Length: 111
Length: 239
Image 1: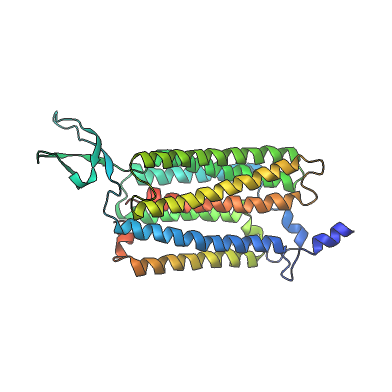
Image 2 (image 1 turned 45 degrees about the vertical axis):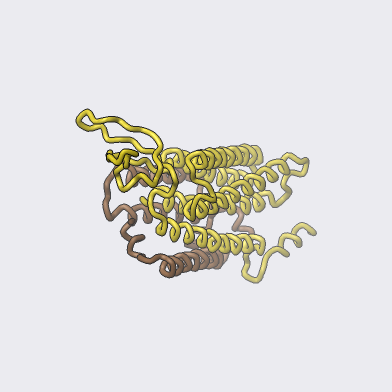
């Protein structure tokens, strides 16, 4: 996710998008949320519903982390810290579900 | 000179301000915290027979002039889409879930917009536009409070419908997860309010105003991305 590699410390304090671009990104995230709602409430996607929702929320998640939190412009170490933690948390989630959920396929099938 | 030395002193051998590094490590630990809560919610959600509350709202199908039934029904009288009357007869009902997705969508939109106002506050602070920073900080605080208002409304609604922290494991895991998120939002509001109040001092937020607001913004945006995950898992993915 990192873009800049190792920056000089002072260069980190002014980076990112312009205010107009931030507002545009916020509107894009709103549109994605509306699409998520549509997919969940008004359109019958069948087995595709959960993958579609996961992909859309992942796009929102990455956009906020990369641009609102400026991780895209930060040194790679910060990306490793955060992504490493997120991957670890996801692994814990999968492990717990595998341990305690009698039928993990229910999750995948949305049952 | 003293200020410059002080500023350089915050940087570690990684070239990253150690306060910023610490904040990202903290956010990483928060990933694990919320990951555990979301796991718990999913486990209990799967183990609990639907519907998860003692009374559920039901509306009948209106077909061929049949009766219209709207109201609250004891869950032990419900099997799939059939309600068992006291006299042993049956009638079809269509159940409305306890989660009010349209209402929660509004609060999701509010929190999303608060991320936009937060990043605009950071932009203002980093570019020396202090009035802009104050206005957007205030907007973020107000949006955070509105989100908390939605959450209080939802909690009270669920309580009136029989779903509380003590109702069952679903209730416990739901309220713990969303409650901890709400607590994080509340803490974020306090942090932003303290920054806003400090900015009105004669010395303002000092020479590192951009850094302070950016660090607070990291926390606020993290609260937003946690809600993105919660909204999808709890509200959008069907039971």
